Structure formats: C-alpha cells, structure tokens
Length: 231
Image (cartoon, rainbow, N blue to C red; front, side):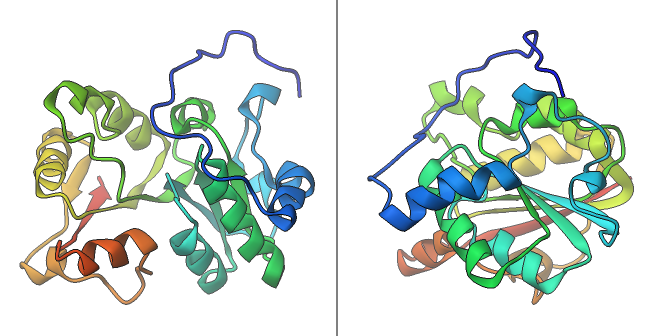
C-alpha cells in the first residue's frame, strides 16, 4: 500500500521508551513486530478482519495496552476474535511480543503509535468491542486536554463500533472516572449499562486484570469498571 503524506502528525504525550530492551526483546521488535504491525504510514486501510484471516469473526480494539496482560489474555481466551492493540511505549510492546511469541498467538495485531491515527483509518462499524484500561489520568487541570476520553475521540470510537458493541473503561482515579462518566453519558452514541453498584465496583470474570490494577490495589486505590453499549 502506498504511504499517505497527508496523515496528520500529532504530539504523543508520555514516554515512548523506558529502559533498554533485553536482547531477546529487541530481536522480537526487529523481527516479529513488522509481521504484526498495522502501519498507518503505509496506508493500512480496509476491514481489519482481513488483517487476521478468515477464521476471525470480529475484531476487538484495546487502546493503550500497557504491558499487554489484558490483551494477551483476551487473545488466548477468544481465538475467533482478532485483537488489535495500540501502544506507543515500546517497552510495553516488547512485553506483549514476548508473550505472543511464547505461545504462538496468531490473532494479535499491533499499532505501535498514536491510537488516534489508527482510529481515523478504520472503516465505520468494524470494531465489536473497545477497551480503554487505566489511561493516563493527567491529573493537573492544565493537562486535562490530554486525556484520551474527550468528545473528538468518542466520536471516532462511536463511528468505528458496531451497533450493540461494548466499550470497557477502567481507572483507579476517581476524578477520571467522573470525567469519563460525564463525557460518555453526554454522548448520544453510548449508554452506561450499570444497573447496580456492583456492576462498576466489581471486575467481571471475563475482564482480565492488569499490572496497573495490581499496583492500584496494593496502594489502596479502588478501581472502577465502566461498561457502555454502542446504541
């Protein structure tokens, strides 16, 4: 596919790289990542099911997968779902690659860049489920504009999701939970599915945990688990 010089370049807040990768991780980034990468600069377009294979019934998207624990668990548990993950932090990408390589998963694809660039390329109604788990809360008021949950991004997510699809959000920061609920409940394309407090206080059995959740619980912070339906 040809490149697209018109693709808008954005500033990606947060770290792109941490400590030096181990030799095995660096090798996977060089050799395995190109096989799994969804490269928007190379003009990745079309139905994302085609990026996986005929056996894939639907595609799920995780935005900011961190170390990849949740994405990896979902890919193992649902081999008939293509799991597409966005993460610009190369150390997190390397952790996921190590797990994928260890068990030979074939239903994982990665965009190691800004999720917004990928969202713009995806066609309407192509994603069945979206996960946004423990995003950076940008706690300072002057940085709130950097939060991923915003009207512009929700418009794009609503566009790419199938009717009846599900968006899952988790955070251990009460202010960001309130922020997310406010934005989601104002958006006409989503409805909050909670009917009782346990629906957002308790993580479902089909919702794998992450290292961020463990850190939050160890520090005495209580996560909230929000689920929304694409109407």
